[in-house]
Amino acid sequence: MINILFLGDVVGEPGRLALFRAIPEFREKFGVHAVIVNGENAAGGRGITPAIAEKFFANGVDAITLGDHVWDQQELIDKIDTMPRVLRPLNLQRNNPGRGSVLLDTPKGKIGVVSVIGRTFMRHPAENPFTTAAEEVQRLKQEGAAAVLVDIHAEATSEKIAMALHLDGLATAVVGTHTHVQTADARVLPGGTAAITDVGMCGSRDGVIGRDAADVLTAQITAMPCKLNIGGWPARVSGVIINAHTKTGKAQAIRTFNWDYDR
Image (cartoon, rainbow, N blue to C red; front, side):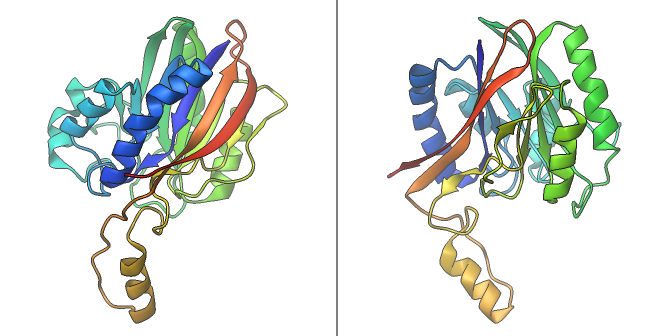
C-alpha cells in the first residue's frame, strides 16, 4: 500500500509553521510515503519564494504544487528551472519556465505528481487542462509511476469534479485546490480514482480563507480598498491521505482531516 499525504494551500507564516509541526505527526501516525503540498500562498499570501520552498523540503515535503499566484515572487521566476520539485501548472503557456510534473522515488515505488490550473474564472491563459493532465498521467505511468496524483487548482467546482471523472481509472487521485475551504465530497470513484473538490488550506483557522477576518470584513462592508493581512493563530492544517494499491495504482481509500494548532 502506498500512502500519500496531500495538504491544501499554505497561507502565510501560521500555515507554514503549523504545516511543519503536522508533517512528522502524519508520517508517524499514518505511515506516509510521500508528502505533497500546495504552496500557492506560502509567501505572505502570494506565491512562494525559493527560500520558503527549501524550508518546506527541509521539513519533510516531497513536492510543491502551485497555481494562479505562481509568478507573484520574482525570485521563483528566476530559479524555478533549478527546482524540479516545485511545480507550476503544467498547462500554462509552453514557453513559461519550470515544469508541471515530477516523479518521486519512495520506498513503495515511484509516485507521479501533476499540477494543472483550471480555466473558468482564473486569470492565467492556459491550455486545455483535461487533455494536458490525461496525457501527462499516461506519460508518468509509462515511466514507471506506481501512483499518480493530480492537483487541479481551479475556482469552479464543476471543473474540478469533471476533471476527476475524466481521469477516473487513469490517475490514482485528483485533488482540488484554490478555494481554501474543504468540501464534503471525498470519495473513491468507480474506476479507482480518489477525488475531492477542495482539500482545504493550511492557515489561520478563524480568518477568512487565511486572511485577517477584521480586514476582510472592512473591505466587504465598506467596499473600499483595504490591505488584507494574513490571519493569526490558531492555525488549521487541512488535507487528505490517500491509500493506493502498489501494483494497480488504484486508490483504496481517501481520508480527510482538519488539525488545529496553537502558536
